[in-house]
Image (tube, rainbow, N blue to C red):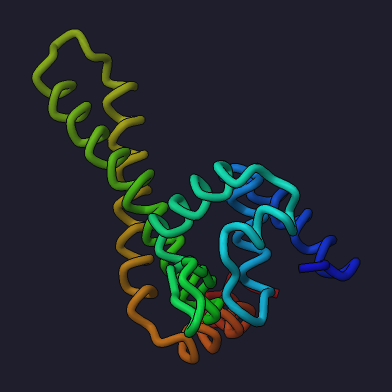
Length: 176
């Protein structure tokens, strides 16, 4: 698959952004390629297009499948496995946020709860530390509760909600 200059630019940028989000560059580039590809691609096509090792492609595809944003598909008349990215951008980002919450936020909240319990029992823990832990826990509790509510919105309602930003701020008396 030969990429146009625009496609190359997008794939390279998505790879760079991936590294800033804590995602391996090749994983992000493969995701970008699959996202813009009009048809599912097999691992060999991906490796050739991006000029990366086939083993790296296999590992990256497993990672993308674990995030549930790339899936294995079969192409009639072709015995090789093909892969495609989710097409619905809203659902894709919803899944990414769910996974990040599960992998990063939930363990942090559990650790904060453990630390607060231990701090309450340990007379040597200073009050400043206890308060900082409680404050951080409240932050995560509030933001995850908000996310859980917003997560339930259908994509169309979510778009309306996000587009209402300035109106909501104005109604709260904190906007322009």
